[in-house]
Length: 246
Image (tube, rainbow, N blue to C red; front, side):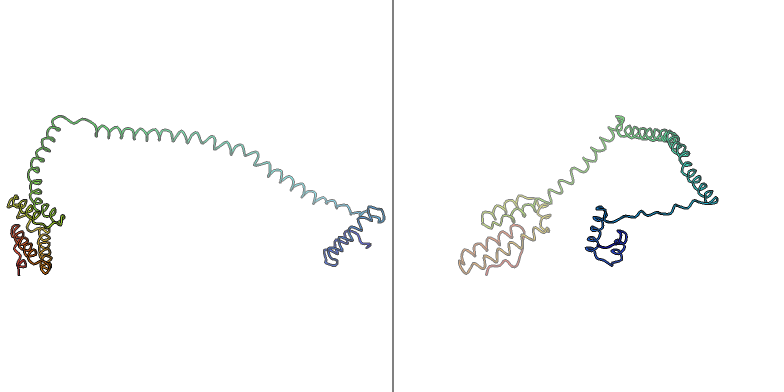
């Protein structure tokens, strides 16, 4: 067992002179020996602290007095600083209250003026004048626009219905000729320069070529259909030099 004290063992372990296991082993042996009375423990007499001189005592006392004054000064002024905002807050609220009341009153007055302007009943004379003016305008525009539109669209709508059916039978061609003949000359003239009439011309010529191509199968039937298409084209005012029987 080593004769070193606990402090010496700790210093040796801190300096790295002994490892952790040796330090613990020596420490346990030393503590066991001390508790068993085999090792005497000496009391260490530390020297008493030095008393401050006269000047140092005065400086220390001044520092303590300054600290007490610094700490106690805010505690005395704290109630006054905390009380000042509470005293000012009600006065600011009193100033805001009249301004808010004036703003709300102004909004209410403006709203009432707008409601009166919008919903106040007009004099009977002005309402009668406006009604008569509106009726005069309606009478001035009513007879011309719808009639002109229907006149222009009658022939075009008839052509559009025929083309959407894709039906080139003799019966359907005859029905179209009857409906076309029932239209006025003005309706014929408004429909002839339209794009739908141009589509009608192209469709007749296309159907004529299809029947011409089938003439090799049944020449007599194809020739009759070609003649019918030529008559149909002439009936609607179409003069196409391409429609010729060979």
